[in-house]
Image (cartoon, rainbow, N blue to C red; front, side, top):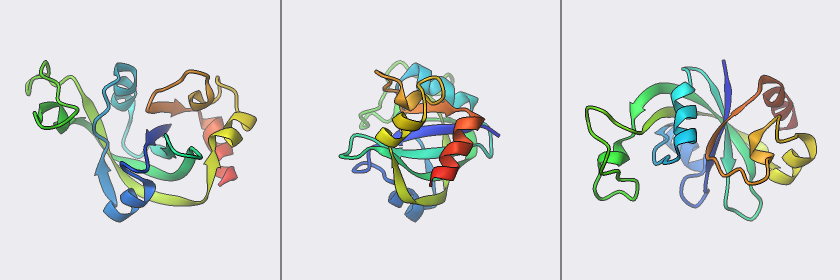
Length: 149
């Protein structure tokens, strides 16, 4: 099993939304490196759900990958802000996963707290200039985060 961190703006899609929906597709990723991380995910991988672009950003919960290799439907939707005219049904450029809600943490683990405990080599979210919305988390860092909740 692998661990990942996926960012979402809580005003757009929050951990509370995932808790309510129970299962959701993770669509709209339009960065090739983040897309490649999505392609590397396996069934059962755990995902740290991170609220970004908010007053206090940080990890707020946990999800599990329940479906992989999905063609992101927003790339074909001409009404979507994530529409990609160069993507074709028989050769989609953007793949994603479906995740299920596992847990909402009792407390937010803030970015500042993560920066105090981890280096950029241990967890990419604390690396200066990192703007990826999907990234791997090492086993060691994941275990430390799980103990912090």
